[in-house]
Amino acid sequence: MSDVVGLVLAAGAGRRFGGPKALARDASGRPWLQLAHDALAEGGCPHVTVVLGAGAEEARSLVPDGARVVVAPDWQRGQSASLAVGLRALPPAAAVAVTLVDLPGQRAEAVARVVRGASTASLRRAVFAGRPGHPVLLGRDHWSALLDVLAGDEGARPYLRVHDVTAVDCTDLGGGQDVDR
Image 1 (tube, rainbow, N blue to C red):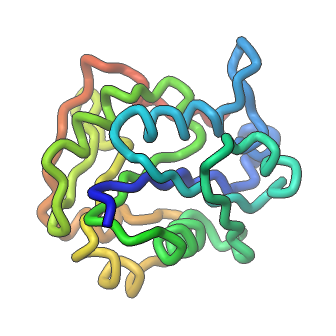
Image 2: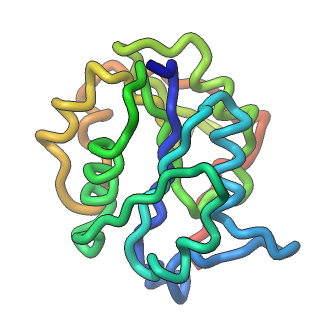
Image 3: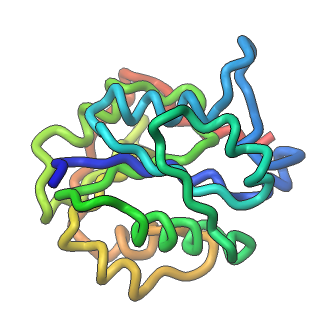
């Protein structure tokens, strides 16, 4: 069993953005999927799973070799549908570090900081200038209970609100801002 695996949620239609963010690239042409994968992999997650939805067929070619791809058939239901599909597809691990594709500035150092000392009971999240962000670390002990309550487009947010989540300050690392437009 691996200590920590990575999960990239990249299934949304990106309506405010103008199209699926799974197809987006940075100014140098690097796919955001590559950036999210690399931040997780270089931050301590040897196995990364990517959840696709809108634009899945086109986006699949942008997923780095070695990453596992799963498609959320009901991605239109929101982030919770993608997270559920992703959690069910993970290999055995003590915990998962979850990030979103629309954080092209996220750095491996933030992932490393959040996953440090991970256990099956861990519940941690990056915080940027006092605002909760990603990655979010979910210890295996939380997966089943989280799957039971996932709904809508909030992902794990409601679950995290009512549990003792350790905030990991990553303000100095930047990269906590999602890109919606």
